Length: 99
Image (cartoon, rainbow, N blue to C red; front, side):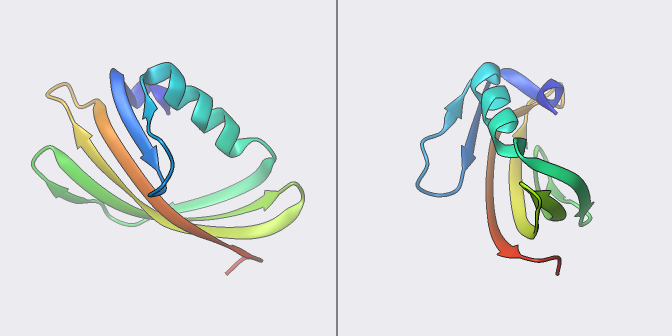
């Protein structure tokens, strides 16, 4: 996933968390996010695209430290002329079980 980001990209995860600035900080966040998750099954909606921006809803069924969860959310992305993400933001909600 990190190959899709520009070196100076900024990712904000959830409204009140500080942003992850730069490719390495985003890579660290991605690694942290998926630690403990196994057996993922992820679906994406068709992206809504407007010029250099896109919004994509997603849903993931996974095991979080062996416990089944469903995570549903949306990611918003702004791309540079090379197609790399320069700014992303996501929101999600997690519930117990697969729904």
